[in-house]
Amino acid sequence: MAMITNFGPLARLRSDASQHVIRWNNGRRKMSGRGLVFWFRPDNASLAEIPLDDREMTLFVKGRSADFQDVTVQGMLGWHVAQPELVADRIDFTIAPRTGRYNARPVESIETRLSGIAAQVVIDYLAQASVRQLLDAGIEPLRALLAAAFAGDPALAEIGIEIVSVRLANLAPSSELERALQTPTFEALQQKADEASYERRALAVEKERAIAENELANRTELARREKQLIAEEAQNARNRAEGEAQAQLVEAEAQAARIRTVEQARAEAEQAHMAVYRDLPANVLIGLAARDLATKLDKIEHVSITPDTLAGLLRELGAVRAAGLPAPIAPPVAG
Image (cartoon, rainbow, N blue to C red; front, side, top):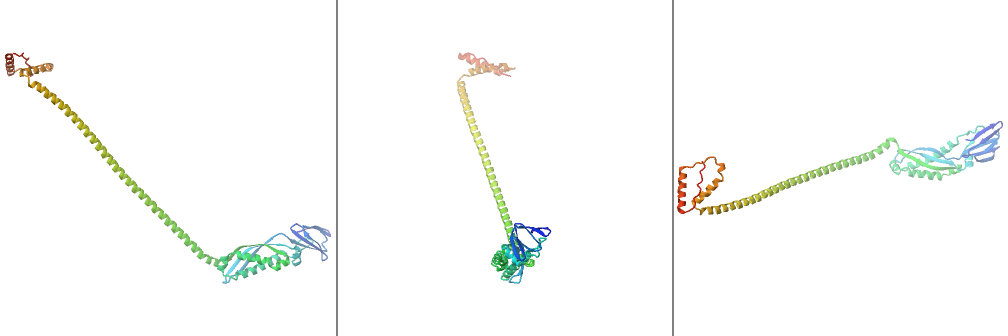
């Protein structure tokens, strides 16, 4: 808003660069431009201030679809003044020369015109299709239709207004109808969620079954390997036992062979020894026996000679002398 400072019969106006100011004196245009600063006489001057910055207004239109359902459209319209002198001729932008306040509500008047144009376009669009078709199409077709309608509207060009942007935020039916329309979607989504849950459970059960089968197969394989290991250990034990028995048998046979050899040698030596003594006379044998006995006298404590023994020795001695042999020493008889 322009700043006006009063100095008695004179006043000074100072405007921003975003404001276009027009000054009339006695019905004639004296000055027009943006960001002006000038002195004037309030008693004979008429002033108009037109904002040149972009403005935005809320768009809210309620219509009815082809199937007689209430539909609400919400959005934002951006506009600005493209020709300030033209819009000042059609809409009251005059300000009080002493205070700088608007004498009317020009911005509201422009937004009312824009709302009327938008409402007519939206109502016609909603009446051409059912609510399901409108919802399926979305807001883009209606937004494009509004932009084209504003761009081609001669009433806006006549007052020097341009639409900068058209943004729609929502196209929705009544809350009851919206819930009714959402119910099948919710049920379908819930059904899909249930199916996904069932699939997850089935997959989990399948995985658990596969895990159980894998564990069972592992236990079976471990049991088989354990059985095989036990059999191999038993076979190894049998092999060791058989090896040990075979070794003992071989050792026993070798020892028996050694014993047989030694005994055979002994027997043969004994037989040879006996063969030597077999041909000797009895008195020689007696003498040899006496000699052997003499080597053991230190171990004999008592010697008993019976009459029969002595008689026998005398007869043997007599026979030896008769034969001309040396007499053997008669061995004592241990008692």
